[in-house]
Length: 239
Image (tube, rainbow, N blue to C red; front, side, top):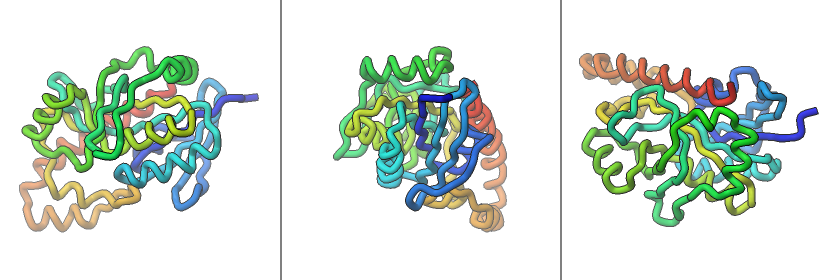
């Protein structure tokens, strides 16, 4: 019988389904929860938090009450360092915080020992510093500036809050992110309207944006292809 459980916090529904394609759906508080058995026989519980640190912290607190053996923050991220490409998987050794009230996270010996046991793929994934930003990092200039400031390889908007909850509850933590946009790719502002606060995608606002600015589709097509590469890579975390 499985005796270990990996708790996963993913911001978006598409991310969660990529990480955990075979799962049962339920609710944990106001959040959707996917659960099932990992290839190695251990259990997983993946909560879909939605976007941002506040929702991530709330979801992680609910997940921590289930006493998983490890909490993993996983999903897509924006590449900051030169050389990162769409689809690259990256593991965090440190997470810098752009959230004033949250301190940085540094991997402990307990974190390392537990993720080596429960995340065998981790050893194949390049690791380094990451950063959690308070807002999307949209332009090449913003990405370069944040990388120069922190040394981070990639940025997300949730992981530091999840790490803080795990540390408070004494649960080992790990973070794996797939790059969805390289450091050289700018993100059109209209694309943000395609994601709701609870992590669902919506097509109507994007179609309206294309109608208002037809050239937008030339930016969205390669961006969508890169995003698909990132989702495909997330499916390799437990393989």
